[in-house]
Structures are given as C-alpha cells and as structure tokens.
Image 1 (cartoon, rainbow, N blue to C red):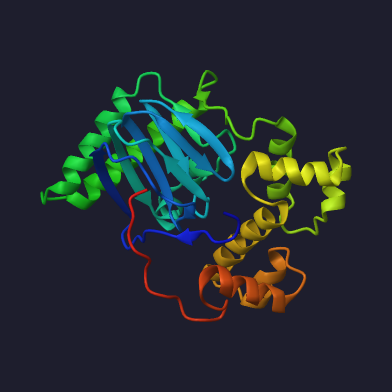
Image 2 (image 1 turned 135 degrees about the vertical axis):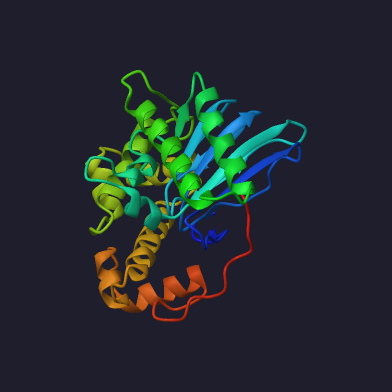
Length: 283
C-alpha cells in the first residue's frame, strides 16, 4: 500500500464524462490520475479514501479529487451504486480560469475532498444536460459542452464558498494529531523531514508516532513522504523542468536514489520516454 500505486485511466480530451450504475461493488487498489476527477453520487453509500483520509459517502455527495491524489473507492456488492464521473484536464481548468476564478482550486482539498450537497438536484440537472450534449452531435456541441461543464464547476464552487457548506469530516485518521502530521508533511514536502523532527514538532514518541501513523493511514511515514515527493517530481518533469532540478525541488537529497525510486514507482527513468497509457478505469 505504500509506494506501489499505479496511474490509472488516461485523458486525451479536455474532459470526459461517464454515467455508471451497477451493484457490483468495487475492488480497486489505491491509484492516482494525472487529471482532476469529480464524482457525483446519485445513489448508494460507501467510502472513499483520498490521500490517506477516508470519508463515508451518502447519496448526494460530490467527491473532488485533484491531479496526483492517491485514492480508492469502497462500495460493497449488492448496493446500487450510481455515479457520474467527470475526468477534467488541469490544462483545461487553467485555460478557463480568470484571476478571480481559479478553477483548479475546487480540487485542492483544502476544505476537504467530499462536499455534502443538501439539495443536489440542480447540480445533477447540469450534469445530465452535459451528458446529453456530449452524447449528441448537434451544431456547437463542443462550445455548449464546455459551457455546461463550467456552469457545473462554478455552481459547485459557489456552494463550497457558502459559509454553511457541509464538508465531510474524514473518519480516518480518527487521531487529530496524525491528521496534523499529514498536513505538516504536505506543507513541508520539499524540506528535509527526519522522523525525529516530526516527533519533536508534535510532542510525541518517535516509535509511537510511527505505529500510530501506519495504523491510522495504512502508510509508513517514509512511504507516504516518498510517494508524495515522487508524484510532485513527476508533475514538475511533465511541466518541462529537468529531472535533476525536479529531484531536488521535490525534497530528494540524492539524484541516484531518486532515479531508482522513480524507476521502481513509474516503470521508467525520469529522463525516459513515457510509456503507453495505462488500462482505462472509471474510478
């Protein structure tokens, strides 16, 4: 569970929409995407784990997953699981953003990864209109589809900005100190973070912290830190930054250890050619 996550799904368009309904449950390992993902739960209940934090889901919830976020859905067989899933290119979000409306912020997880929609019908109606437009071949289909997606995202963003917005609280980790440690690691990702420093920062025994961290998140501290750094380095390389610079900008102290970890994690060296798209999945 620590450093063997795989990239799943691929996106060649600005966005794609999938409307799925089944009672099969889910059996999907932890994975990540290089695009943002929106899931609207139309029916069913279950769980979703995003970057080490597990949330209970109920009908009407919106799950907001940013690019590179490690996640996994958890739904039991026999329960009708209906969802609309939209893959969205980060580049599309950047192109459509304005100084006062940065669309990628919807997926940054600062308030949480799950938004409870008390009255989800308006959001669902926009998603249904988008689905219908994408299925047709009418004049102006691309322009209208882009507009409908933007309306949907802005409607969600406005609900998120409402002071009464109900963001789900993660049920794991249940220990607030471990949640604080997760946030601290993410905020200081590019710095040297020895285990001793974390223990001192949070006034906790080193060995107790290590046991508690694994118990609460399923990760070792080293595994979580390396995974986040590798994903960060991969994103920098994708943006055109050299492998060497990406290595040190991501907090690695040794280029040789970085290349070994990168090759083991992604199946290619940092300077190697990108492999074929992974097998497509909708989760």
